[in-house]
Length: 446
Ligand SMILES: Cc1ncc(COP(=O)(O)O)c(C=O)c1O
Image 1: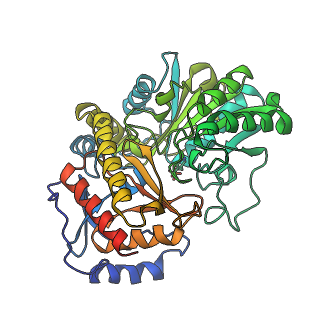
Image 2: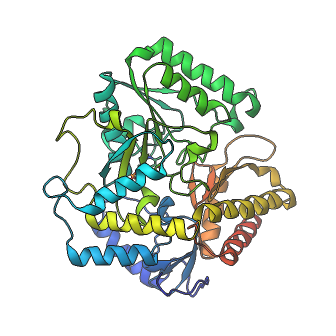
């Protein structure tokens, strides 16, 4: 890890003057469609800290959207990627292959759920992995329909826009979208009309009924679900939902795809979130946390399904870049050595405890409608006092108040009313608690 001190430091307004200057250049040069949560320009980052160009040190509760689980400058990632950079940057695995790619696929076979024969293919981004999972499932089943869920997020390419639930900002004005994509209900416990305790059984029955009646199970190539829905608001499908959907897929020859791009690689206190209910997906998509910040993604799954696509049908110039593969091997080494699953569970214990305490102490504590998530993927859903009406303004105001104090937090959710916390798993407990103090103080400002 870089030697960046693990201490919050606020020297200027946030953003400071140097960030403001860079922001002016950015506005002139960078397309407006590419947003930023906080226009603070990074100088260096590591552990639980992001240091900006003005010398401020922010506590990081975002991990670059669940990417830098091992930190943004993890020793093993830097060491292995640097050595690889010096050896060669690229040959294209489809031209002349290299060992790192194979080793990452071997690691994926070992770490993902199930002891069946597995194979992988590597890509650059999460969206690319999801697109390829659909290609593979269609090649295997010789069917076309793809089923996704309310509140799901799978990316910003044409097919993954179609798979993504929320219109604004992801889809508005960017259609037409890919055909043969069908969306069905998910067991969103907090908002399920008959209560969270009924959500698993009722939502799975509804989803299965819609698939059967509206599409026909025999036409469905893949069912794709995030075991913990990320951008949709850190929704954990109520217990029983995932097993019922997975069983339905198995009974009907449908490829069950777990999109673990946000929830995978120790984020939820397990290597993969679907392990929580003993789910063994046919295919699993990974990215984000896999490579300590380098761009890498994968589709891993049953060998017979993965081999269904003809030679040359999968790939891409940069897919499984050797430097990114070296980074992934460094990230996996770090996760094992530092027991980052254990660390994620400890983060959950601290965060959920402190957040519950905040809710009970606050005069209007019921604006924290729900505290949820697993491991270091924790969120609070904000509502108007005395109701379940989403309060996106409160989430935005809280985030702003945290940013001003040097704590980077992100929002999410279909209704924009969820404040989510994704600290690097290597964050120190003192920084974690200091971040939670800032959140507590932020409540006083709204
Ligand atoms: C569950 C899930 N799938 C897919 C994606 C898309 O990944 P990428 O942004 O790398 O294309 C994301 C990104 O947030 C995600 O959270």
